[in-house]
Length: 586
Image (cartoon, rainbow, N blue to C red):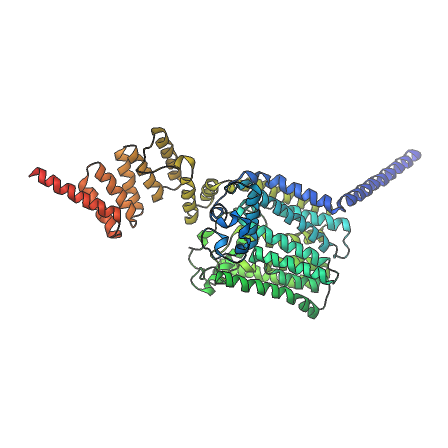
């Protein structure tokens, strides 16, 4: 019996040693595997393409029409000098926006395809590839930063960097930036900021390396002004990562500030203004107060928590917030809490990278905080750069916690990435085309005026809606297609006078006069201040012989627009017809 117990003890000891050996072998194998940057970058790139690759089949949506489809400046590479010197070259419509690097890349994509019109697939493919590049660069930057943490093994640092990059690649809040062609500027700015930071973290105090960082920073700001805070990030890297004295850090940061100043001055010269518009809340102070509730929304979105929205324009029309309202106080408290936490963590070397991530988050939100008035309070694409800092802070915090329960922490991070991936796969379909974007946004967030307008515009671009003219014949089959489409649209937007008018005019072409009158009367009630609505109603009244009603409706149109040519002609025609009728009666 004693011998049996001894044998069982030896067996357990052997199994234990063997188990530990297996763990060590697996650890060595994993470390060898993850030690190759190209392997990790390949995994990140493949993961990104698997999630977002289907967007290559998406269409142009919303602002893509004026930035790409109608923008003649991208039709030739000969326009590159104008693209970097003129605001008119950025868009088919004059807007206070200067993104020359993005516009130049649009021109390159157009030239690569060689078709008469821009092809959406190559523009969407470009977005996916730029996002994949940003995720890979984030891994490289996070890996270098994690190497600075004392007491952290190289393997743990690389796994943390990999999880940070995968989380960024899959995060649902960046669906707008990846799926919308317009947002290439956000992706390009992020890539060049990360490239500059990667070189800066490896800088050996040589002139060539320093100049390379400044050049990358210059390209970043010319991609989008959201990259400007990189100048302050450089200061933090010099002082907190390279351990320079604060005076020396400030000295090395001056050229970055000069680049930022050069860009801001040049941008103002080209645009003729610095702010995009007047303060959207009526006054500068009130606009800043109304930004604090946005902080709470951004904090929720950073965690990937729905709901998401393609357009936050409804916030512009909301009543101004009181400085003592719960939303303002909550946002202000969160700002002070995160700022104080970052300052407190910065003084602790083992937590400095976590503080660096929080500073990154706050600094890259400054350009979209209405310090310079913008046309909107918030957008999900604005979180593309700040999200990197948030994930870096979260990853470093989890890395510290993993010393107690490593498998649990890695499991939590993996589950979070899986949830974000599933949410992104569901969310991206919103951006498939104009109708999907507008109608699905309407279902989730009803009542956004700009979404409704864009939905109606997209509806009239549908194949069955094209070619409709009042003076051209319409086949019965085509008319029924139009009516069916309009009926479905009116179920979503029953009070839209454009849809109601189009329905009435289509009924008129089908000679369904009672339906035409009912729809056009409703359209006039929905928008009584628009002369065209009364003119359309007068036209149908005249057609069916309701001369008195036609005269009344025409008079209403002329009261709204006294020099409305068509209405003046109709009034003259009605008066002549009534005079002729009186003569015949006599």
